[in-house]
Length: 79
Image 1: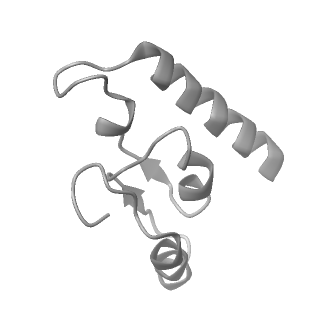
Image 2: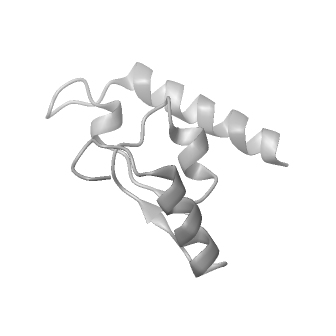
C-alpha cells in the first residue's frame, strides 16, 4: 500500500503475480479481515500488524481470529 495500514492495490498485486510467476510475493501493508481473501490470492506470504491492532502497541485477538477464519475459508474455496 501507499503507507502503513493502507491496503495494496489488487490490480498491482495481480500484475506482480503474473510477472513473478511462481516466485514468492509478500504483502505487508493494510491486510485486514475485510481484504485478506482478495490479497492472499496473489501472495505467498502476508505480514499483518496494523490491520489487527486495537492500538499502536496492542493486537486485537478477536480481529486476528476473524482474519484467520476469513483466510482459511478463502483457501478452502480456492481448492
